Length: 158
Image (tube, rainbow, N blue to C red; front, side, top):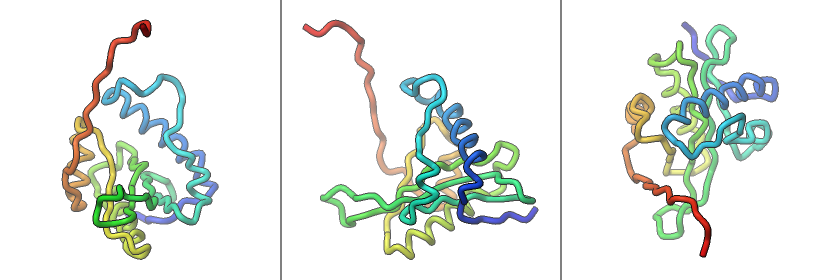
């Protein structure tokens, strides 16, 4: 199996939009606050066109099987770095998981971040998503911060 990692192009958009919907469906059980129906996490088309964002896909025999992006974001003012690379849109078709493809995309995005002078790389993942966490740990990521939430009951304001 020959895996090719390359930059996404506009012609990839239909497949990437399908990936986005599959990603959202996979995350809904982990986050009850995600609205039902079709929605979008990203403006993938704009990301592909934006030279400051790196959108990558993995192909096997001409079929796109995985995706991911990197974007420079401003760090909190009290940290020891001004910007960091944020990775997102990590999706691999189920039948291609467990083959290191996501790790190849992450490595390419880490290289991109390094070339941009970014020394910190971050991503977010649901704590219930054990397979994704294991994949990210294989790529060198460490658990860092746990975001907590509390849903308040709805009611009339006084």
